[in-house]
Length: 169
Image 1 (cartoon, rainbow, N blue to C red):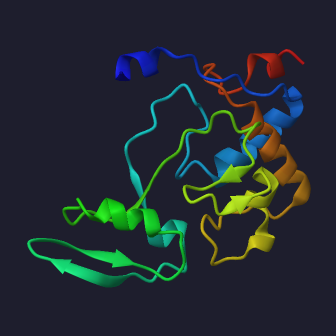
Image 2 (cartoon, rainbow, N blue to C red; image 1 turned 135 degrees about the horizontal axis):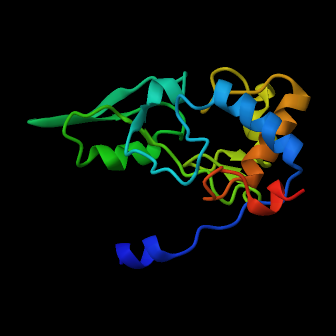
């Protein structure tokens, strides 16, 4: 099954003006590459981003002890509810979320593993969501945010990380 899935072609990025993509890439590389690849042809490492980093309001409470395994934890709200299930087989590792592939973002309107951000990339990157919300990494300037969104919409697995159809414009 893995071989079949690996053989499937990645979705193509949206056609976005090359100048927008270039500006967005520069901003993305300055702000986002501590956690995300800008080149989608590169393997995404199986790294977990700790929940406290991705969700500043994370306040875990032990809801069940199970020696010798790590305790099962939960935090108020729904963002870590998926983590409770993951904890069922956890061996004391950090609680966190895996790095996502940044493909097919032009068609997506719902973001984060719990679908807590609806309304597209504009909503995800808008600082109006607040500093304690999940994924509080924003682009303050509206024009720069639009450029980053253009870059993200254009991503595919071409070596440059930019849709071939976009770079032709």
